[in-house]
Length: 171
Image 1 (cartoon, one colour):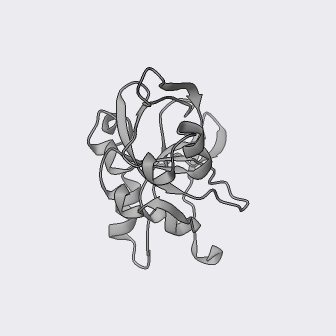
Image 2 (image 1 turned 90 degrees about the vertical axis):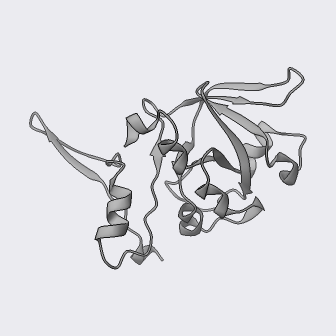
Image 3 (image 1 turned 30 degrees about the vertical axis):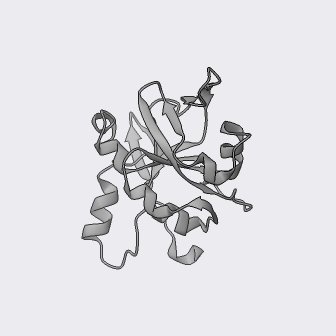
């Protein structure tokens, strides 16, 4: 499908310097879907602001919580992301990303966060991002075994943005 997939980038000129960025305005996702004919799907990929490294607290209970101060690979996206890249589902469903405060993890990330649990038992577990965004695990996908620039491992449901103060940063 590579001949049917496009990535939108922002061309910027500032003080005589030209550059390109994958950081496009958040409303573009909905505008593409509603205003451009022939587009089958639009897949937003949004990072936390700043260097996109996130503090993660994995709630394990019994004072066994795992804290990672600068976790990489955390994005906000929708269910179409998994269709675009051909992920294999190990637990849960892409439909769960239509609900705010859900997260899908790759197999390797899930095993890092919950090393003694089965994938099915991980569902419903809580993870806290940047101390104030609590989500529940709603799916596990197999790791991609292909060369791609899409290398994220934590996929927070895109509707979460609109339900939190994050909308002030993205929308």
